[in-house]
Length: 375
Image 1 (cartoon, rainbow, N blue to C red):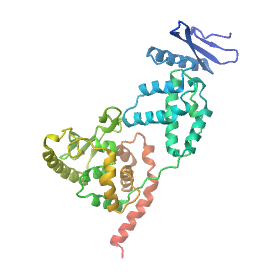
Image 2 (spheres, rainbow, N blue to C red):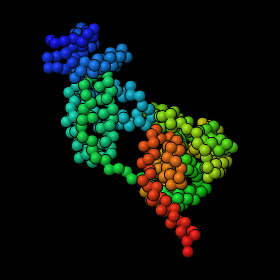
Image 3 (tube, rainbow, N blue to C red):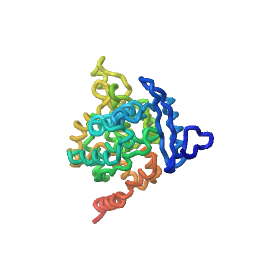
Image 4 (tube, rainbow, N blue to C red):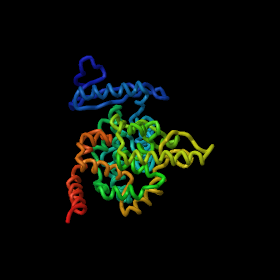
């Protein structure tokens, strides 16, 4: 049978040149000995996979026999996936609605890239958008990546499958005049401060809705992004820690935000008195009339749509306010590194994607000056 690695015991090389490691899984309920083979092209690769598999076994994660189905594995993976809130809901929805019904009965070890390609094409033909199919494939790729690390399969077939072509969404970016019209239309609205924070500081929707008054210092004009409001399965809306260290940041507030937040605080105190015992004191800046967390869908279906229409701005999403903040800052000559810190981007490349619109914004600024001062 070929050569064993020195002092490695369960690792050996087959006659065809491939290396194999064997993990003893103990005995099944009938007393039969169960083993799992791990394959690789080099001894080092197999040794690394064996180390990962043994660790997974010690944690109780390496329970897959050769006939374990993809559906059974995905169920275990979802229980242990290190994600939370909306991301977990997104994973579970894709597994439950799309992946498991189509591929769940296939043994994990026998799943092929052709199987995944078939799923992709079937979902596209059914009318599912390319972006949704792309997300579905990404969920499966993430899950199979964990299977590779656990030593359950030798390769990630979802990575080998052909991803659907996704047309890139073109964000609706507000220029200076449109941004002013939007804030003017929001003046006096119950959530005026929410839109001012999103557009002026570039906060994400969950970051803005998760603001607490203890995070806001109106005297020092600072705002701490410390939490994000996310829906957690079985627990409802919850305040969670930001996903990355850069997302947790301290921002300087411009006058437009300070004024809006002062007015908002006074309005909220009136609402609190009117609610009386019904008020839930959670310390949130943006709440319902009874102090509960605001749901993003309620914001978009309500005042945001009215303000957008009043300002004469079409095709605008709430998240486009964040995009607009980035381009407006860059157009004013703010360095890319500063904009990166302001928006909480993890890499400068995420900020640089906005730079292509700056020349047009500069032209708009010049045109605006001509209108103001030209003959």
